[in-house]
Image (cartoon, rainbow, N blue to C red; front, top):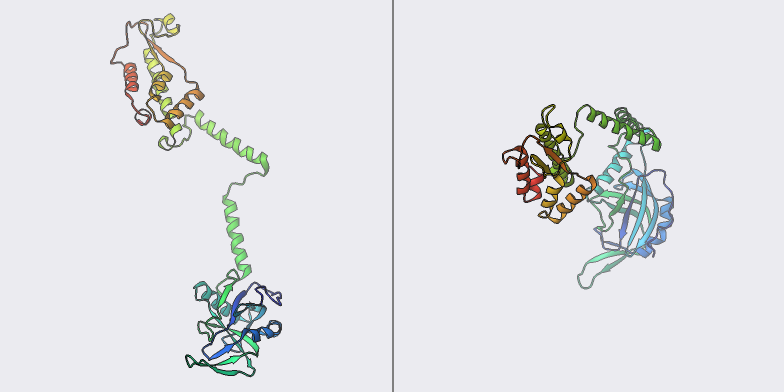
Length: 344
């Protein structure tokens, strides 16, 4: 007894399957075949035997190997192909074998041979009688679909990748695949080979982006709500743009207060308002959740945000509470969370 394949030989195509051809049990014909008798002839059967379709005259394959597993004997078999288009029945049978196996109705096998000196036995307890067969010669094993004499003789594996009757010819299939690949390659932008080609593509992409920005087209960026870092950066840019606009409005008329405009802003002189983005943001990070707080701090450090000032030399005292600058500062001071401040 061995679970390794015995007397194995090669086959000329990929249509192969494995199946139990007999199990030591009383079958529908009241026969009980002992495996010890069957295995004696299995070497001969692999060399000279055939595989039939439902015990008919149609020989559609041959046994390729055998092995015994306990009370079962299993074979590996090969099925013929439709040579020169003259044997379409072989394609049809192979298609049936695959369909049964794919539908989890495995299909079954049955053996045909000659019984040698069968012995009639009866069970003293149940009264059932059967023919005990310890010696036999087998001529063929048949695929019989879903109607076996021995319920244990089932197909156990089928090479589902092997071409069936529903498949097109190899030449037609190859032509279709080549046609599809050609169409895809014609539509596809070909990247030059090697690292140099990849670098060239990256530079071209970068040049396109710079050109867009020079022409006034904003660079593509992920939505702020999907990227916390982008959200913070976007909000900072909005504030800086707003302050730049306020600086222009606060600038003196031509020839008026030029010396004061050039003087550095400290926020201590009358008519001068000091607006620090960094100072305001650092104040609000104290109230932010840990993750967002850390993100803001990293951005501040990486971008080195500096103090910006607006000066109105002709105006004395503190800034007007109704002015745009005062409103911007007041809004920032009232913000209590990252969503409220950065998500507007």
